[in-house]
Image 1 (cartoon, rainbow, N blue to C red):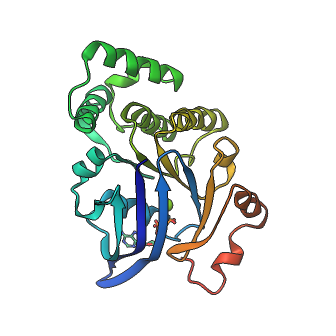
Image 2: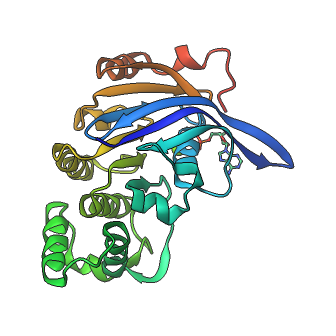
Length: 254
Ligand SMILES: Nc1ncnc2c1ncn2[C@@H]1O[C@H](COP(=O)(O)OP(=O)(O)O)[C@@H](O)[C@H]1O
Ligand SMILES: [Mg+2]
């Protein structure tokens, strides 16, 4: 079983000519087949963790380590991370003008699998997966993220997730901006991937509502750039009732 290990991760950004430390020692282990929820107040550094794992150049790792099956993820290029089996869905996905969803998916699948998927089975696979996510087939010819609504962006992410079958998937605010029906459809997609037992999922979210559809094995509370508490699904219920106040007191919660 593949394991993502994050050890004592410290990350800084340059802002206003000053270096600001945002992640202050994150420790987390995600194994294939496990579902972890990271929950925390706005500005606690959740997206910074996702960007750092994605290799975004703006985020400087000052110390600590990230490994996937013992391989140093921080040394890998963005492409190498994808090929190693990491999947990252960002809170604000970028537009790729001139590249259709259909081409993008096939190129990604080719990169991740190491060979181009056979055209006939691939077309069928994409069509069926889009159908389950209640996506219009015409969507495949649109340019990636160009003019996508919030819900379309998130469905597109889950479509990628289902087709690429990574070892570890990091989903940042997959629930934001979704109405109840879209939330259910997207959650069902995540659960289908989960049921394969082959994907470890790190579900980053501010709200507890997605956890009504996706039951995490572990819940971590993120505050002030690190994990403040870890527990089981019951911890999410506590957060639903009590909020994050107990965790941010005395800390700078921007
Ligand atoms: N690129 C950046 N430049 C400057 N500050 C940043 C940058 N990215 C994040 N930050 C700051 O780091 C803190 C954590 O942000 P973020 O990781 O987006 O939190 P969350 O996702 O938990 O809401 C915030 O104070 C935010 O302003
Ligand atoms: Mg965020």
